[in-house]
Image (tube, rainbow, N blue to C red; front, top):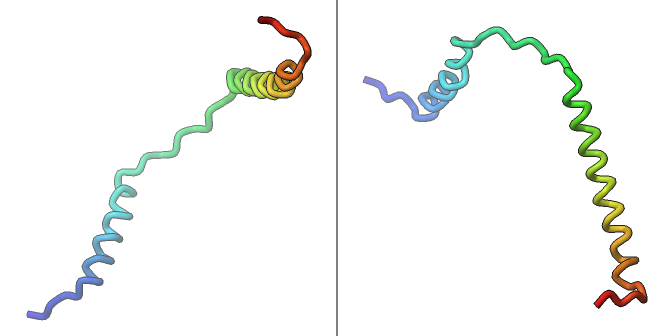
Length: 70
């Protein structure tokens, strides 16, 4: 009985592992439609970034002002 090379067994196992999930594949899901929430979330993120940038631009001006609060 001839011995099967380990590389051949490894390639066969990798091929089986790669193509086995395709047997139970389903039809692709339909593309989601936009209901406006993604647009609202994008605007909210944009406003958050603008607020953070303004905060970090204005903060150094306050840190070195001549006003003494305490």
